[in-house]
Length: 261
Image (cartoon, rainbow, N blue to C red; front, side):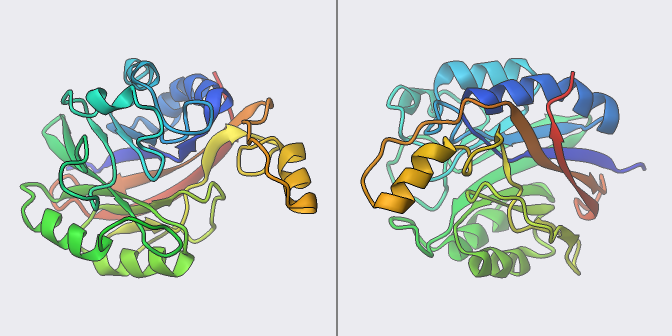
């Protein structure tokens, strides 16, 4: 039985990131023929948060599931949307009673994919232990096909989490820092891993923000309102080959390219 392909797109930043994804999705389908497309959209609304309208547009364009992160709740209008049963996940390692869910499943062609979102704790406050949370959740899943978006700051925490989940997840994909790392690999027990997928957003910029604003902030230490750079967007993501029976990965490839149609 031939493996299937899974595409994951890194943090979508503002309108340039959304436009880049819109333009690139037809090319992604032609080039890689993915069974599933998953995208992190926690920065998609003007650089901070997501709105129901943006999420719906991504689904309409062929994104199967959406992950979030530490900015999941920056737009209050998304609170109800997170409870509406759509395949959109906020960090699972949050306090009980927080709107939304940390895991969702999508199914195509006989493959049931569980999509899990977790936040790290190093340099990020307010989250429960992601290692223990992942253990609890994955132990009760009814599918070996598990994609984990690990939204974290520290490289060491991400690498450790990848090894912790090796053999129990199809992929552990780092997000949050917006800078693509060059360490994509399939770990010994069959889990595809990368420390950070990178962003779908404007270049040139400083991780998606107008570079002049950031430079002024660094040079003066004065507060500044960050704004998404008004520059063309690029996409950053990964393509993963997955065994249909075991859910283990056999290959992972980075994508970083200007938007294509």
